[in-house]
Image (cartoon, rainbow, N blue to C red; front, side, top):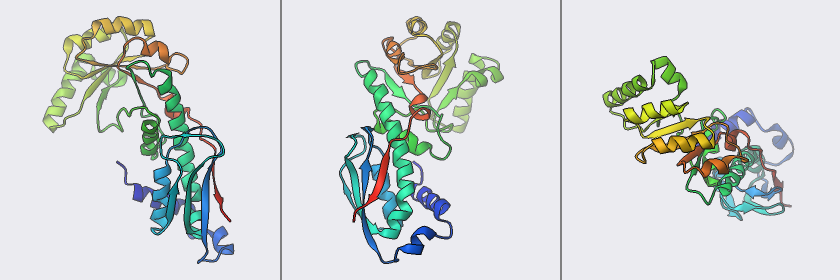
Length: 279
C-alpha cells in the first residue's frame, strides 16, 4: 500500500506552494465553514474515505458526515458527504478531493459495467499496469470498489513473462527455467504467468510446466476454447488483448478464469462531482 499521508502532503504542496493566495486575500484565517459534496452524475461512488483523510490530514479536527460509502450507486442530485472545517482547509483541499474522487468514481463505474455484463459467468475481470504514473494505487483501488480485481500492482509482486522477455531470452522454456532459478536464488515466492501467442506456445508451456497462469494474448473466443482443451485445470488461465464491452461476454462464455481489460482504467471518464459551500 502506498504512503497516503505522504501523497496528500506532496499533492497539497504542488497546489499551494507558498500560499493559497485567493483564500488568504479574502477569507479571515479563523473563519469556519461547511461544505457538501454534490453528485451530478450516475454510476458508482469511489474515494469517499480518501476525501476524509485529505481533510483530516490538513485539519485533524475536521468533522465529516457520510451520506455515501465507497462502492454504492450514485445518482444526480444526491450528496456524498458534508465536512465542517476551517474555510481555508475546505478551499485548500477542494481540488485534490475532487480530482481523486472524480477519477476513481469514473473507474469504479466503468469497471462495474464490465462486471455486471459477465456476472453470470465465473470469469473475473482484472486490471492492468496501464495506469497513470504515481496514481496507480488510487486507480487500482477504484477497480476493486467497482467489483473488479487487481492483477499485479507492479513489476515487483508477480512474474509475467511477456513476448519481449521470451524473445530476448531465446524461447519460452529458457525464460521459464531462468525465472525459476532466479526466484530460488533470491528466495522469492512469486507466482509466474507466461504470455502465449499461439496454440503451439500453449502446448509448449503446458508440456514444460513450472508456472501458475497462462495468458492467452489476442486469442479470439474460439481460439481460447481450443486452448482450454489443451490446458489442465492445474493452470490458471487469462484472456487479454482486444477485449471490449461488446465482446467480453463471448470471452466469459469460454470458461476462462480471468479477463484482463486495460480499458477499465485508461478509457474511464471522470464523473461530475462538485464541492459547494453551505451558507
